[in-house]
Length: 179
Figure 1 (cartoon, one colour):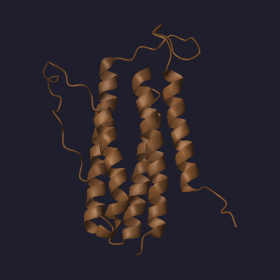
Figure 2 (figure 1 turned 180 degrees about the horizontal axis):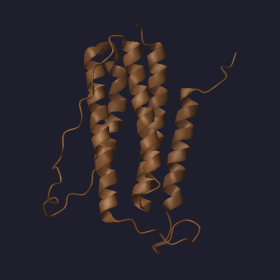
Figure 3 (figure 1 turned 60 degrees about the vertical axis):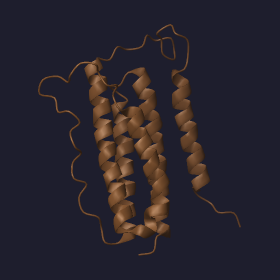
């Protein structure tokens, strides 16, 4: 009997298609136009840097959460490792380019991420919390698309799609995890 509903393969295929569509939508000539012939909107460099810094900071907090859950519940470590590695890659891709000059006056230099908080004693609950954090990350990146320039928007769309896939996979992992 064939299983009905969403499968992992179906979710990953849909996520990949969305990410590919986001990337391909922005591909075109060097005429400075986006899809539909509209001129690319200029986004201040400061806005782009702020969006990137926020994404990297949130990603660092999520990485710390992954580490805490894997440390507290070693049985989940193997399932979390590839997702954690992807989150680390997203952080490297989103990192703002290093400016030759010093940071602006009063701007913190690589501020440490906030404390990720305690980990639930139940491994299933801990993995579900990670799924919730990935959903929040997907939503935050999708919201940031509204103010990002075309290049950063494509990257954020791709990372948001990956975060949504992570949330799904973590939800499935939580169901498979013994309490």
